[in-house]
Image 1 (cartoon, one colour):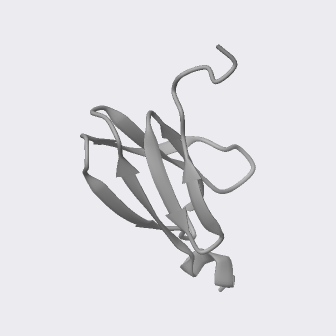
Image 2: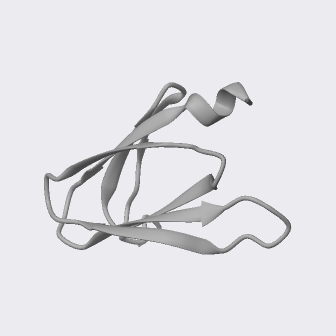
Length: 78
């Protein structure tokens, strides 16, 4: 088993309606699971043999072993 499959991450919603979308492994990447988080909800997730990538849509903080990522729904160039 690939050690990256043990990696986990945490998503904390900073607003209502943050979507966490799991994407499949394999030849064709497809959506396979979606969770909707409300403000201050926290989701712990782990990469598996079925999940190779995750998309986060909305204003959230994502915590990984590589660091903390802040999403920003507003255009920062304005």
